[in-house]
Image (cartoon, rainbow over all chains, first blue to last red; front, side):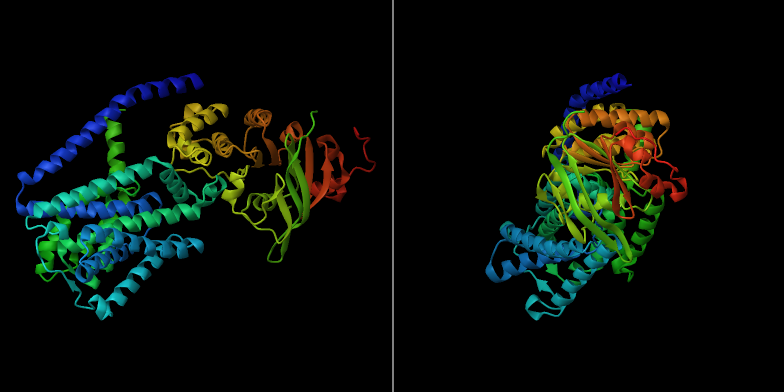
Length: 338
Length: 253
């Protein structure tokens, strides 16, 4: 019994170094492919890719808290907004390049995350109540900014376009492409590190059974707080890119629930709590997102994509509750053997 | 029987009330480093509540708990675990979505920060509890007996000096019970003190150096297993006054 188990483990261990090397090669090839892709794509296709990368990035940042940690935040737009507004205001009023400003934006978003997390986790808010709390904070941010003229009020902030890369602006949208690719790759790297390390193991334990985790020495408060702060920081960084790419900030757009939904839906559909999930989800949802951007918005059916998102979420919950990637992986295993 | 060793855990006059129910009405006990202490008593006596207080899941209304001389009253469970007291739950709580190995790895991470080392330690623990061949299986797929082993393995992975086992034999077949008794003995032999709540009397009698009897939130009897079995107060608490024998049996003491 034990002998057989050791045998299987030994065989698996012998296979792993080769599979591991193969994985690294595959990763390098994929990144190289993505880096070369703009050379063969139309400008429109590059735009689509930029949005895929941006939402893959934001989804990956959310995934750390919502996927691995199981703390479903429906207010991540608040962190995007804080990051975007901070970066833009620093650039407009103080001339600080967004390359530096994005870290200030990320840090402020992290502080907001710490406040939300401190409140929620200190008082044991979880599940539905945590969702509500995050939505409430995002709405508060939206309404405050909407009504504060110094922050641009309802008109928002407009950034003058200079095309200066130091201002995170590019005349050729391939510049944005590489920044977005870098962000998405970076966030994926962070997620992989988290998953492999102690924080990931603890987050998953907290997600599965918080009390059992406590009994095993896990400081569940600190673990959840670390997750929300990291997630918020990364999302805030993304906000800087969001602002620079769209180069106008409207409180209703950047703090709004539709953006929060856009952030959540990729990892949830793709596979929350996996590294590939947000990436797969971003690719799967690209056609729908494009339809929303180009057809629905102009045809007076703005927001229709949210209806479709809702139906899609229902379908995912009913048929693929863990998202596409885990089921895909299981299906591949059952067909190809291990 | 070897000397019991230094006192590891002390509870002094612990009280706990839930609304109108006085669950613990002044419980005083001690567990020494080399002991296996059995904790028995009828349902509702307060045994699991006592475990909650000892492990930090409930703060007592009165009294004190000390681990190796340092007060732990009011500390959170994860801190008490770090200080060397681990517990299992009466209804086992595996991390269902994780594999057996991953379950134990989480617990091992309290002592080592590097995931690879924790994984290695987890494998060693699984081998000790004879679950190594199930390492990659999802925890949800285990039989009850194996889930109990997993629960034990997780607690062991935190390298406790004292282990609180809450009805670890419940629901096991006689063969599984014997295996579990042997496992608990091995764990004790490796240097872990044990306080166990049990209803399965053969396990309590086989394992315990000392038995405490809890009834209605108070310790009503304490002594070697054989003495406890014949104690009229214990019989009265478990079975009722009507079952107390007319004349007390000559005891082994």
